[in-house]
Amino acid sequence: MGAEVGAQTARSQALAVLRIRSRALAAALLPAAFAVVLFAGWATGHAEGGGWDVLRQVVTGVAVLSLIVAAAVAIVVAQSRPAMSPTVDVAERDAPDLYRLVRDLADRLEVPAPSAIALTPDCDSWLEDRTHPAHSPPARAASSGGATPAPRGGEERSAAPVLVIGSPFLWWMRVGELRAVLAPVVAGTGPSAHPDLAAARRFVRGLDGAVADSRKPGLGLLRGLFLAGTGRIARALLRACRDHAAEMERGVAAAASERAQSVDYGLRIVAQEQVGLAYAGWDRLLTRVALPAWRMGRWPSRLDAGVVAALTELSRRDRLADGFAARLGERPACDLLEEPGAADEAASLLAARLFHGGPAEAGPDWSPVGWDEYPEEVVDRKWRTDAARLHRVLDELGVRLPADPTASASAPTLSRVLEHLAGPDDGRELPPASGADGAGTALGSDSVPSPAEPPDAEGALGTDLDEDEDEDPDAVFGSERSAALAARISTEVAREEAQAPVPPPAAPGADDEELWSDGTLPLFPLQAPRTGRELLVDHVTAMVCCAAIDTAGAAPGLDWLDGPVLLAGGERAGDLGPCVLSLISDGDPGPLRDWLARHGVRPEKPVRLV
Image (cartoon, rainbow, N blue to C red; front, top):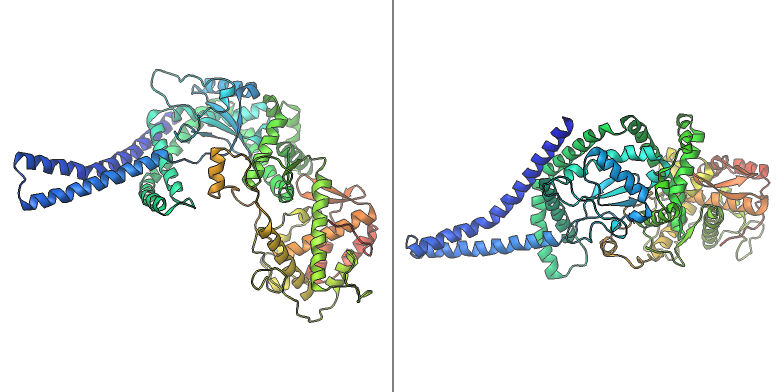
Protein backbone atom coordinates (compact mmCIF):
# COMPACT_ATOMS: atom_id res chain seq x y z
CA MET A 1 0.00 0.00 0.00
CA GLY A 2 2.79 2.44 0.87
CA ALA A 3 4.50 1.82 -2.47
CA GLU A 4 1.29 2.58 -4.33
CA VAL A 5 0.78 5.80 -2.36
CA GLY A 6 4.32 6.95 -3.09
CA ALA A 7 4.02 6.06 -6.76
CA GLN A 8 0.69 7.87 -7.03
CA THR A 9 2.17 10.97 -5.37
CA ALA A 10 5.12 10.90 -7.77
CA ARG A 11 2.85 10.58 -10.79
CA SER A 12 0.57 13.42 -9.67
CA GLN A 13 3.54 15.72 -9.10
CA ALA A 14 4.98 14.72 -12.48
CA LEU A 15 1.72 15.73 -14.09
CA ALA A 16 1.93 19.06 -12.25
CA VAL A 17 5.39 19.63 -13.75
CA LEU A 18 4.09 18.76 -17.20
CA ARG A 19 1.17 21.16 -16.72
CA ILE A 20 3.67 23.95 -16.04
CA ARG A 21 5.39 23.05 -19.28
CA SER A 22 2.04 23.10 -21.10
CA ARG A 23 1.11 26.45 -19.57
CA ALA A 24 4.42 27.95 -20.65
CA LEU A 25 3.80 26.70 -24.17
CA ALA A 26 0.24 28.05 -24.10
CA ALA A 27 1.49 31.43 -22.92
CA ALA A 28 3.95 31.52 -25.83
CA LEU A 29 1.20 30.62 -28.32
CA LEU A 30 -1.46 32.94 -26.92
CA PRO A 31 -0.35 36.09 -28.85
CA ALA A 32 -0.28 34.02 -32.03
CA ALA A 33 -3.82 32.83 -31.35
CA PHE A 34 -5.01 36.42 -30.89
CA ALA A 35 -3.27 37.38 -34.13
CA VAL A 36 -5.07 34.54 -35.95
CA VAL A 37 -8.42 35.75 -34.60
CA LEU A 38 -7.72 39.31 -35.72
CA PHE A 39 -6.67 38.20 -39.19
CA ALA A 40 -9.80 36.05 -39.42
CA GLY A 41 -11.93 39.07 -38.49
CA TRP A 42 -10.18 41.16 -41.12
CA ALA A 43 -10.73 38.48 -43.78
CA THR A 44 -14.44 38.26 -42.99
CA GLY A 45 -14.88 42.01 -42.81
CA HIS A 46 -15.74 42.13 -39.09
CA ALA A 47 -12.48 43.77 -37.88
CA GLU A 48 -11.65 46.52 -40.35
CA GLY A 49 -10.66 50.12 -39.85
CA GLY A 50 -7.72 52.08 -38.51
CA GLY A 51 -7.97 50.93 -34.92
CA TRP A 52 -8.24 47.26 -35.84
CA ASP A 53 -5.31 47.54 -38.25
CA VAL A 54 -3.05 49.03 -35.58
CA LEU A 55 -4.13 46.41 -33.05
CA ARG A 56 -3.54 43.64 -35.58
CA GLN A 57 -0.02 44.85 -36.35
CA VAL A 58 0.88 45.17 -32.67
CA VAL A 59 -0.47 41.73 -31.80
CA THR A 60 1.25 40.20 -34.80
CA GLY A 61 4.59 41.69 -33.74
CA VAL A 62 4.15 40.43 -30.18
CA ALA A 63 3.18 36.99 -31.53
CA VAL A 64 6.27 36.77 -33.74
CA LEU A 65 8.54 37.87 -30.88
CA SER A 66 6.88 35.41 -28.50
CA LEU A 67 7.31 32.53 -30.95
CA ILE A 68 10.96 33.42 -31.53
CA VAL A 69 11.66 33.52 -27.79
CA ALA A 70 9.79 30.25 -27.22
CA ALA A 71 11.69 28.56 -30.02
CA ALA A 72 15.01 29.87 -28.66
CA VAL A 73 14.25 28.59 -25.17
CA ALA A 74 13.12 25.22 -26.54
CA ILE A 75 16.31 24.86 -28.59
CA VAL A 76 18.55 25.81 -25.66
CA VAL A 77 16.74 23.39 -23.32
CA ALA A 78 16.89 20.59 -25.89
CA GLN A 79 20.59 21.12 -26.61
CA SER A 80 21.71 21.78 -23.05
CA ARG A 81 23.90 19.28 -21.26
CA PRO A 82 22.33 18.25 -17.96
CA ALA A 83 24.82 17.51 -15.23
CA MET A 84 26.19 13.99 -15.31
CA SER A 85 28.34 12.56 -12.56
CA PRO A 86 31.92 11.61 -13.44
CA THR A 87 32.11 7.86 -12.94
CA VAL A 88 34.12 4.77 -13.82
CA ASP A 89 32.08 2.65 -16.22
CA VAL A 90 31.96 -1.06 -15.48
CA ALA A 91 31.38 -3.27 -18.50
CA GLU A 92 29.45 -6.48 -18.02
CA ARG A 93 32.41 -8.56 -19.13
CA ASP A 94 34.43 -6.97 -16.31
CA ALA A 95 31.83 -7.74 -13.62
CA PRO A 96 29.43 -10.49 -14.74
CA ASP A 97 28.66 -11.50 -11.15
CA LEU A 98 27.82 -7.91 -10.20
CA TYR A 99 25.49 -7.54 -13.17
CA ARG A 100 23.90 -10.88 -12.29
CA LEU A 101 23.35 -9.76 -8.69
CA VAL A 102 21.69 -6.52 -9.82
CA ARG A 103 19.47 -8.27 -12.37
CA ASP A 104 18.40 -10.90 -9.85
CA LEU A 105 17.59 -8.09 -7.45
CA ALA A 106 15.51 -6.34 -10.12
CA ASP A 107 13.65 -9.61 -10.79
CA ARG A 108 12.83 -10.00 -7.10
CA LEU A 109 11.59 -6.40 -6.97
CA GLU A 110 9.71 -6.78 -10.30
CA VAL A 111 11.27 -3.65 -11.77
CA PRO A 112 13.38 -3.06 -14.91
CA ALA A 113 17.07 -3.78 -14.46
CA PRO A 114 19.47 -0.81 -14.77
CA SER A 115 20.91 -0.37 -18.23
CA ALA A 116 24.51 -0.30 -16.98
CA ILE A 117 26.64 -0.06 -13.84
CA ALA A 118 29.24 2.56 -12.96
CA LEU A 119 31.41 3.28 -9.92
CA THR A 120 31.82 6.58 -8.09
CA PRO A 121 34.58 7.41 -5.57
CA ASP A 122 32.08 8.32 -2.89
CA CYS A 123 29.97 6.63 -0.24
CA ASP A 124 26.64 6.83 -2.03
CA SER A 125 24.61 5.02 -4.69
CA TRP A 126 21.96 6.33 -7.04
CA LEU A 127 20.28 5.97 -10.43
CA GLU A 128 21.32 8.36 -13.18
CA ASP A 129 19.46 8.94 -16.43
CA ARG A 130 21.89 9.29 -19.33
CA THR A 131 19.37 9.24 -22.14
CA HIS A 132 19.50 12.98 -22.89
CA PRO A 133 20.32 13.56 -26.58
CA ALA A 134 23.35 15.66 -25.67
CA HIS A 135 24.87 12.76 -23.77
CA SER A 136 26.53 9.72 -25.20
CA PRO A 137 24.51 6.47 -25.32
CA PRO A 138 23.35 5.50 -21.85
CA ALA A 139 24.89 2.06 -21.75
CA ARG A 140 28.53 2.90 -22.42
CA ALA A 141 29.75 0.28 -19.97
CA ALA A 142 27.32 -2.39 -21.12
CA SER A 143 28.13 -1.83 -24.80
CA SER A 144 31.24 -3.96 -24.46
CA GLY A 145 29.45 -6.55 -22.41
CA GLY A 146 25.76 -7.37 -22.42
CA ALA A 147 22.67 -5.82 -23.90
CA THR A 148 20.14 -3.72 -22.06
CA PRO A 149 17.23 -5.85 -20.83
CA ALA A 150 13.93 -5.40 -22.62
CA PRO A 151 11.28 -3.40 -20.74
CA ARG A 152 8.68 -5.26 -18.78
CA GLY A 153 5.03 -5.20 -19.65
CA GLY A 154 3.28 -4.06 -22.80
CA GLU A 155 3.27 -0.31 -22.19
CA GLU A 156 5.88 2.03 -23.63
CA ARG A 157 8.77 2.43 -21.22
CA SER A 158 11.68 4.82 -20.99
CA ALA A 159 15.24 3.52 -21.06
CA ALA A 160 16.37 2.27 -17.67
CA PRO A 161 18.87 4.51 -15.87
CA VAL A 162 22.47 3.66 -14.99
CA LEU A 163 23.15 2.30 -11.50
CA VAL A 164 26.01 4.24 -9.87
CA ILE A 165 27.60 2.45 -6.89
CA GLY A 166 29.99 3.95 -4.37
CA SER A 167 33.31 2.15 -4.81
CA PRO A 168 34.11 2.06 -1.03
CA PHE A 169 30.95 -0.04 -0.59
CA LEU A 170 32.33 -2.78 -2.83
CA TRP A 171 35.48 -3.17 -0.75
CA TRP A 172 34.09 -2.77 2.75
CA MET A 173 30.69 -4.44 2.43
CA ARG A 174 30.01 -8.10 2.07
CA VAL A 175 27.97 -9.39 -0.89
CA GLY A 176 24.77 -9.74 1.13
CA GLU A 177 25.17 -6.27 2.63
CA LEU A 178 25.70 -4.71 -0.78
CA ARG A 179 22.56 -6.41 -2.13
CA ALA A 180 20.56 -5.08 0.82
CA VAL A 181 21.90 -1.54 0.36
CA LEU A 182 21.22 -1.54 -3.38
CA ALA A 183 17.66 -2.88 -3.04
CA PRO A 184 15.92 0.49 -2.55
CA VAL A 185 18.12 2.06 -5.24
CA VAL A 186 17.35 -0.59 -7.84
CA ALA A 187 13.66 -0.42 -6.87
CA GLY A 188 13.70 3.15 -8.15
CA THR A 189 13.87 1.94 -11.74
CA GLY A 190 10.18 1.05 -11.49
CA PRO A 191 8.83 4.61 -11.06
CA SER A 192 11.59 5.89 -13.35
CA ALA A 193 10.17 3.85 -16.22
CA HIS A 194 6.78 5.59 -16.10
CA PRO A 195 6.42 7.84 -19.18
CA ASP A 196 5.05 10.84 -17.24
CA LEU A 197 7.83 10.69 -14.65
CA ALA A 198 10.46 10.33 -17.35
CA ALA A 199 9.06 13.30 -19.30
CA ALA A 200 8.91 15.48 -16.19
CA ARG A 201 12.49 14.62 -15.25
CA ARG A 202 13.73 15.35 -18.77
CA PHE A 203 12.02 18.74 -18.67
CA VAL A 204 13.50 19.66 -15.28
CA ARG A 205 16.99 18.43 -16.26
CA GLY A 206 16.79 20.39 -19.48
CA LEU A 207 15.91 23.57 -17.62
CA ASP A 208 18.74 22.96 -15.18
CA GLY A 209 21.17 22.43 -18.03
CA ALA A 210 19.99 25.64 -19.73
CA VAL A 211 20.55 27.61 -16.53
CA ALA A 212 24.03 26.11 -16.17
CA ASP A 213 24.87 26.95 -19.80
CA SER A 214 23.88 30.57 -19.24
CA ARG A 215 26.43 30.85 -16.41
CA LYS A 216 29.43 29.43 -18.22
CA PRO A 217 32.44 31.74 -18.48
CA GLY A 218 34.10 32.66 -21.73
CA LEU A 219 30.96 33.19 -23.82
CA GLY A 220 31.01 35.73 -26.62
CA LEU A 221 29.00 38.94 -26.37
CA LEU A 222 26.09 37.91 -28.61
CA ARG A 223 25.97 34.34 -27.38
CA GLY A 224 26.28 35.52 -23.80
CA LEU A 225 23.33 37.90 -24.19
CA PHE A 226 21.30 35.20 -25.94
CA LEU A 227 21.98 32.58 -23.25
CA ALA A 228 21.44 35.13 -20.48
CA GLY A 229 17.94 35.86 -21.79
CA THR A 230 16.99 32.21 -22.23
CA GLY A 231 18.59 31.44 -18.87
CA ARG A 232 16.29 33.93 -17.10
CA ILE A 233 13.23 32.26 -18.59
CA ALA A 234 14.58 28.80 -17.75
CA ARG A 235 15.21 29.92 -14.14
CA ALA A 236 11.64 31.19 -13.85
CA LEU A 237 10.27 27.88 -15.12
CA LEU A 238 12.64 25.97 -12.83
CA ARG A 239 11.43 27.93 -9.79
CA ALA A 240 7.83 27.14 -10.76
CA CYS A 241 8.68 23.42 -11.02
CA ARG A 242 10.91 23.22 -7.96
CA ASP A 243 8.38 22.21 -5.32
CA HIS A 244 6.58 19.76 -7.59
CA ALA A 245 9.86 18.17 -8.68
CA ALA A 246 10.98 17.79 -5.06
CA GLU A 247 7.70 16.14 -4.09
CA MET A 248 7.92 13.90 -7.14
CA GLU A 249 11.36 12.65 -6.11
CA ARG A 250 10.19 12.12 -2.53
CA GLY A 251 7.33 10.04 -3.84
CA VAL A 252 9.69 7.99 -6.01
CA ALA A 253 12.01 7.42 -3.04
CA ALA A 254 9.11 6.43 -0.78
CA ALA A 255 7.76 3.99 -3.34
CA ALA A 256 11.18 2.46 -3.94
CA SER A 257 11.90 2.13 -0.22
CA GLU A 258 8.55 0.49 0.43
CA ARG A 259 8.99 -1.92 -2.46
CA ALA A 260 12.45 -2.90 -1.16
CA GLN A 261 11.12 -3.80 2.30
CA SER A 262 10.62 -7.38 1.17
CA VAL A 263 14.29 -7.86 0.25
CA ASP A 264 16.75 -8.64 3.06
CA TYR A 265 15.05 -6.30 5.50
CA GLY A 266 16.95 -7.46 8.57
CA LEU A 267 20.28 -7.44 6.79
CA ARG A 268 19.55 -3.95 5.40
CA ILE A 269 19.46 -2.52 8.92
CA VAL A 270 22.93 -3.90 9.60
CA ALA A 271 24.15 -2.78 6.17
CA GLN A 272 23.05 0.80 6.84
CA GLU A 273 25.39 0.86 9.83
CA GLN A 274 28.19 -0.12 7.47
CA VAL A 275 27.26 2.78 5.18
CA GLY A 276 27.89 5.29 7.96
CA LEU A 277 31.09 3.56 8.99
CA ALA A 278 32.38 3.47 5.42
CA TYR A 279 31.64 7.17 5.01
CA ALA A 280 33.60 8.05 8.16
CA GLY A 281 36.60 5.94 7.10
CA TRP A 282 36.51 7.31 3.54
CA ASP A 283 36.47 10.90 4.78
CA ARG A 284 39.47 10.39 7.06
CA LEU A 285 41.37 8.51 4.37
CA LEU A 286 40.88 11.32 1.86
CA THR A 287 41.67 14.24 4.17
CA ARG A 288 44.51 12.74 6.21
CA VAL A 289 46.13 10.22 3.87
CA ALA A 290 45.29 10.98 0.24
CA LEU A 291 45.41 14.78 0.36
CA PRO A 292 49.10 15.05 1.41
CA ALA A 293 50.04 12.76 -1.49
CA TRP A 294 47.88 14.62 -4.02
CA ARG A 295 49.51 17.92 -3.12
CA MET A 296 52.90 16.38 -3.96
CA GLY A 297 51.82 15.08 -7.37
CA ARG A 298 51.31 11.49 -6.18
CA TRP A 299 47.99 9.68 -6.00
CA PRO A 300 47.44 6.56 -3.88
CA SER A 301 46.34 3.88 -6.33
CA ARG A 302 44.43 1.69 -3.86
CA LEU A 303 42.15 4.02 -1.92
CA ASP A 304 39.32 1.51 -1.65
CA ALA A 305 41.65 -1.11 -0.20
CA GLY A 306 42.83 1.61 2.18
CA VAL A 307 39.25 2.05 3.42
CA VAL A 308 39.24 -1.58 4.53
CA ALA A 309 42.53 -1.11 6.36
CA ALA A 310 41.33 2.13 7.99
CA LEU A 311 38.03 0.67 9.18
CA THR A 312 39.72 -2.49 10.38
CA GLU A 313 42.06 -0.32 12.43
CA LEU A 314 39.04 1.58 13.75
CA SER A 315 37.42 -1.67 14.86
CA ARG A 316 40.64 -2.54 16.68
CA ARG A 317 40.72 0.78 18.56
CA ASP A 318 37.00 1.34 19.19
CA ARG A 319 35.23 -1.19 21.35
CA LEU A 320 31.91 -0.05 19.83
CA ALA A 321 33.12 -1.40 16.48
CA ASP A 322 34.26 -4.77 17.78
CA GLY A 323 31.79 -6.70 15.63
CA PHE A 324 32.70 -5.00 12.38
CA ALA A 325 35.99 -6.81 11.81
CA ALA A 326 34.32 -10.21 12.35
CA ARG A 327 32.44 -9.71 9.06
CA LEU A 328 35.67 -9.71 7.10
CA GLY A 329 35.64 -13.48 6.89
CA GLU A 330 32.63 -13.33 4.57
CA ARG A 331 32.94 -12.78 0.82
CA PRO A 332 33.65 -9.11 0.01
CA ALA A 333 31.56 -7.44 -2.65
CA CYS A 334 34.70 -6.53 -4.65
CA ASP A 335 34.95 -10.23 -5.53
CA LEU A 336 32.05 -9.56 -7.91
CA LEU A 337 34.55 -7.73 -10.14
CA GLU A 338 36.89 -9.64 -12.44
CA GLU A 339 39.83 -7.30 -11.72
CA PRO A 340 39.25 -5.48 -8.42
CA GLY A 341 42.72 -3.92 -8.52
CA ALA A 342 42.13 -2.24 -11.88
CA ALA A 343 38.75 -0.91 -10.74
CA ASP A 344 40.28 0.39 -7.51
CA GLU A 345 43.03 2.18 -9.43
CA ALA A 346 40.54 3.81 -11.81
CA ALA A 347 38.31 4.94 -8.94
CA SER A 348 41.35 6.24 -7.02
CA LEU A 349 42.48 8.33 -10.00
CA LEU A 350 38.96 9.72 -10.42
CA ALA A 351 38.86 10.60 -6.71
CA ALA A 352 42.10 12.56 -7.14
CA ARG A 353 40.57 14.45 -10.05
CA LEU A 354 37.28 15.18 -8.31
CA PHE A 355 38.63 16.25 -4.93
CA HIS A 356 41.99 17.73 -5.89
CA GLY A 357 42.09 18.46 -9.61
CA GLY A 358 44.78 16.26 -11.12
CA PRO A 359 44.91 15.18 -14.77
CA ALA A 360 43.03 12.21 -16.15
CA GLU A 361 46.14 10.07 -16.69
CA ALA A 362 49.38 9.34 -14.89
CA GLY A 363 52.46 11.27 -15.97
CA PRO A 364 55.91 12.44 -14.80
CA ASP A 365 54.44 14.91 -12.30
CA TRP A 366 51.35 12.88 -11.49
CA SER A 367 52.28 9.30 -10.65
CA PRO A 368 50.64 6.58 -8.55
CA VAL A 369 52.04 5.48 -5.22
CA GLY A 370 51.42 2.18 -3.44
CA TRP A 371 50.73 1.88 0.27
CA ASP A 372 54.07 0.17 0.91
CA GLU A 373 55.86 3.12 -0.72
CA TYR A 374 53.78 5.81 0.99
CA PRO A 375 55.98 6.43 4.08
CA GLU A 376 59.17 7.00 2.08
CA GLU A 377 57.66 8.59 -1.04
CA VAL A 378 55.12 10.88 0.66
CA VAL A 379 55.65 11.20 4.43
CA ASP A 380 59.43 11.60 4.43
CA ARG A 381 59.41 13.85 1.38
CA LYS A 382 56.67 16.05 2.83
CA TRP A 383 58.48 16.53 6.13
CA ARG A 384 61.75 17.42 4.41
CA THR A 385 59.97 19.86 2.09
CA ASP A 386 58.40 21.62 5.07
CA ALA A 387 61.70 21.65 6.94
CA ALA A 388 63.43 23.16 3.90
CA ARG A 389 60.75 25.88 3.70
CA LEU A 390 61.19 26.63 7.40
CA HIS A 391 64.95 27.12 7.05
CA ARG A 392 64.51 29.13 3.88
CA VAL A 393 62.28 31.55 5.77
CA LEU A 394 64.80 31.72 8.62
CA ASP A 395 67.50 32.54 6.08
CA GLU A 396 65.37 35.37 4.70
CA LEU A 397 64.90 36.69 8.23
CA GLY A 398 68.67 36.60 8.83
CA VAL A 399 68.40 34.13 11.73
CA ARG A 400 71.74 32.62 12.75
CA LEU A 401 72.90 30.54 15.67
CA PRO A 402 74.42 32.62 18.48
CA ALA A 403 77.48 30.39 18.34
CA ASP A 404 78.22 31.59 14.80
CA PRO A 405 76.88 35.15 14.43
CA THR A 406 79.10 35.92 11.44
CA ALA A 407 78.00 33.00 9.30
CA SER A 408 76.26 33.97 6.08
CA ALA A 409 73.89 31.01 6.29
CA SER A 410 73.23 28.69 9.16
CA ALA A 411 73.15 24.90 8.85
CA PRO A 412 69.72 23.26 8.75
CA THR A 413 69.68 22.08 12.35
CA LEU A 414 66.88 21.73 14.84
CA SER A 415 68.90 23.77 17.35
CA ARG A 416 68.61 26.78 15.08
CA VAL A 417 64.80 26.56 15.17
CA LEU A 418 64.61 25.94 18.92
CA GLU A 419 66.91 28.79 19.88
CA HIS A 420 65.12 31.22 17.60
CA LEU A 421 61.61 30.38 18.88
CA ALA A 422 62.66 30.10 22.53
CA GLY A 423 64.87 33.19 22.51
CA PRO A 424 63.80 36.57 23.87
CA ASP A 425 62.01 39.05 21.61
CA ASP A 426 64.44 41.74 20.51
CA GLY A 427 61.89 44.15 19.07
CA ARG A 428 63.40 44.12 15.59
CA GLU A 429 60.98 44.92 12.76
CA LEU A 430 61.01 42.11 10.24
CA PRO A 431 61.50 42.81 6.52
CA PRO A 432 58.55 42.19 4.20
CA ALA A 433 58.22 38.77 2.61
CA SER A 434 60.18 38.69 -0.63
CA GLY A 435 58.04 38.15 -3.70
CA ALA A 436 54.80 38.61 -1.81
CA ASP A 437 52.04 40.58 -3.44
CA GLY A 438 51.13 43.85 -1.84
CA ALA A 439 52.02 44.19 1.81
CA GLY A 440 52.14 40.45 2.41
CA THR A 441 50.80 38.84 5.55
CA ALA A 442 50.59 41.13 8.54
CA LEU A 443 52.87 40.47 11.49
CA GLY A 444 51.09 38.23 13.93
CA SER A 445 48.29 37.42 11.51
CA ASP A 446 46.79 34.00 12.18
CA SER A 447 45.04 33.38 8.90
CA VAL A 448 46.02 31.93 5.54
CA PRO A 449 44.40 33.42 2.43
CA SER A 450 44.70 30.30 0.32
CA PRO A 451 44.15 26.53 0.48
CA ALA A 452 46.38 25.25 3.23
CA GLU A 453 48.77 22.47 3.85
CA PRO A 454 47.39 18.99 4.47
CA PRO A 455 46.92 17.80 8.04
CA ASP A 456 49.91 15.50 8.01
CA ALA A 457 51.25 17.00 11.21
CA GLU A 458 48.09 16.02 13.05
CA GLY A 459 49.01 12.40 12.61
CA ALA A 460 52.48 12.94 14.03
CA LEU A 461 51.22 15.22 16.76
CA GLY A 462 48.44 12.95 17.87
CA THR A 463 46.42 15.97 19.01
CA ASP A 464 43.66 18.22 17.73
CA LEU A 465 44.42 21.89 17.15
CA ASP A 466 40.77 22.95 17.00
CA GLU A 467 40.68 23.56 20.74
CA ASP A 468 42.15 27.07 20.26
CA GLU A 469 39.85 28.04 17.37
CA ASP A 470 38.00 30.72 19.30
CA GLU A 471 40.99 32.16 21.14
CA ASP A 472 42.41 35.62 20.50
CA PRO A 473 44.92 35.27 17.63
CA ASP A 474 47.48 37.31 19.60
CA ALA A 475 47.23 34.88 22.52
CA VAL A 476 48.04 31.63 20.72
CA PHE A 477 51.76 32.40 20.24
CA GLY A 478 54.33 32.26 22.99
CA SER A 479 56.38 35.10 21.52
CA GLU A 480 56.47 37.70 18.78
CA ARG A 481 59.11 35.58 17.07
CA SER A 482 56.64 32.68 16.77
CA ALA A 483 53.93 34.98 15.43
CA ALA A 484 56.30 36.57 12.93
CA LEU A 485 57.61 33.21 11.73
CA ALA A 486 54.05 31.89 11.35
CA ALA A 487 53.10 34.93 9.27
CA ARG A 488 56.10 34.53 6.99
CA ILE A 489 55.47 30.80 6.51
CA SER A 490 51.83 31.54 5.69
CA THR A 491 52.91 34.02 3.04
CA GLU A 492 55.45 31.59 1.61
CA VAL A 493 52.91 28.75 1.42
CA ALA A 494 50.33 31.01 -0.21
CA ARG A 495 52.88 32.21 -2.77
CA GLU A 496 54.02 28.68 -3.64
CA GLU A 497 50.47 27.47 -4.10
CA ALA A 498 49.58 30.48 -6.25
CA GLN A 499 52.61 29.83 -8.49
CA ALA A 500 52.07 26.07 -8.74
CA PRO A 501 50.95 25.16 -12.28
CA VAL A 502 47.60 23.43 -12.58
CA PRO A 503 48.01 20.44 -14.92
CA PRO A 504 45.33 20.25 -17.64
CA PRO A 505 43.27 17.09 -18.02
CA ALA A 506 44.93 14.59 -20.31
CA ALA A 507 42.79 13.44 -23.25
CA PRO A 508 39.48 14.39 -21.66
CA GLY A 509 36.15 13.18 -22.90
CA ALA A 510 33.34 15.54 -23.84
CA ASP A 511 31.84 15.50 -20.37
CA ASP A 512 35.23 15.94 -18.66
CA GLU A 513 36.03 18.90 -20.90
CA GLU A 514 32.80 20.61 -19.87
CA LEU A 515 33.50 20.01 -16.18
CA TRP A 516 37.02 21.40 -16.43
CA SER A 517 36.08 24.40 -18.57
CA ASP A 518 33.44 25.71 -16.18
CA GLY A 519 35.57 25.17 -13.09
CA THR A 520 33.51 22.28 -11.71
CA LEU A 521 36.60 20.13 -11.10
CA PRO A 522 37.78 19.80 -8.43
CA LEU A 523 34.39 19.63 -6.78
CA PHE A 524 35.32 21.18 -3.45
CA PRO A 525 38.35 21.49 -1.18
CA LEU A 526 38.77 18.69 1.32
CA GLN A 527 40.17 20.96 3.98
CA ALA A 528 39.50 24.48 5.18
CA PRO A 529 42.34 27.02 5.08
CA ARG A 530 44.78 26.51 7.95
CA THR A 531 45.84 29.19 10.38
CA GLY A 532 49.37 30.50 10.62
CA ARG A 533 49.84 28.77 13.97
CA GLU A 534 48.82 25.42 12.50
CA LEU A 535 51.27 25.88 9.66
CA LEU A 536 54.06 26.77 12.08
CA VAL A 537 53.27 23.69 14.17
CA ASP A 538 53.38 21.58 11.00
CA HIS A 539 56.78 22.94 9.97
CA VAL A 540 58.38 22.64 13.40
CA THR A 541 57.02 19.11 13.74
CA ALA A 542 58.41 18.26 10.31
CA MET A 543 61.83 19.53 11.40
CA VAL A 544 61.71 17.44 14.59
CA CYS A 545 60.74 14.35 12.60
CA CYS A 546 63.58 14.88 10.12
CA ALA A 547 66.06 15.22 12.98
CA ALA A 548 64.69 12.07 14.62
CA ILE A 549 65.00 10.12 11.37
CA ASP A 550 68.53 11.32 10.58
CA THR A 551 70.06 11.18 14.08
CA ALA A 552 68.03 8.73 16.16
CA GLY A 553 66.99 5.96 13.77
CA ALA A 554 63.30 6.88 13.70
CA ALA A 555 61.23 6.20 10.58
CA PRO A 556 58.26 7.73 8.76
CA GLY A 557 55.07 5.73 9.02
CA LEU A 558 51.42 5.67 7.98
CA ASP A 559 48.46 5.51 10.32
CA TRP A 560 45.30 4.59 8.42
CA LEU A 561 43.13 6.94 10.45
CA ASP A 562 45.51 9.80 11.22
CA GLY A 563 47.81 9.84 8.22
CA PRO A 564 51.60 10.41 8.43
CA VAL A 565 53.18 9.52 11.78
CA LEU A 566 56.66 9.23 13.25
CA LEU A 567 57.77 5.78 14.37
CA ALA A 568 60.33 5.86 17.17
CA GLY A 569 61.56 2.45 18.24
CA GLY A 570 58.88 0.87 16.06
CA GLU A 571 56.07 2.62 17.92
CA ARG A 572 54.12 5.75 17.11
CA ALA A 573 55.50 8.87 18.82
CA GLY A 574 52.16 10.19 19.92
CA ASP A 575 53.61 12.32 22.71
CA LEU A 576 55.37 14.71 20.34
CA GLY A 577 52.36 16.95 19.75
CA PRO A 578 52.02 18.56 23.19
CA CYS A 579 55.76 19.27 23.25
CA VAL A 580 55.63 21.22 19.97
CA LEU A 581 52.49 23.05 21.04
CA SER A 582 54.19 24.06 24.27
CA LEU A 583 57.01 25.64 22.28
CA ILE A 584 54.74 27.48 19.85
CA SER A 585 51.92 28.54 22.18
CA ASP A 586 53.82 29.06 25.44
CA GLY A 587 57.37 29.72 24.26
CA ASP A 588 58.58 26.89 26.52
CA PRO A 589 61.14 24.59 24.86
CA GLY A 590 61.59 22.43 27.97
CA PRO A 591 59.10 19.63 27.10
CA LEU A 592 60.44 19.35 23.56
CA ARG A 593 64.06 19.23 24.72
CA ASP A 594 63.13 16.49 27.20
CA TRP A 595 61.42 14.57 24.39
CA LEU A 596 64.50 14.88 22.17
CA ALA A 597 66.77 13.66 24.96
CA ARG A 598 64.46 10.77 25.76
CA HIS A 599 64.50 9.55 22.13
CA GLY A 600 68.18 10.19 21.52
CA VAL A 601 67.65 12.97 18.96
CA ARG A 602 70.64 15.30 18.47
CA PRO A 603 69.30 18.75 17.54
CA GLU A 604 72.74 20.19 16.74
CA LYS A 605 73.26 17.79 13.81
CA PRO A 606 72.32 19.01 10.30
CA VAL A 607 69.43 17.22 8.62
CA ARG A 608 68.92 16.31 4.99
CA LEU A 609 66.48 18.56 3.14
CA VAL A 610 64.93 18.47 -0.32
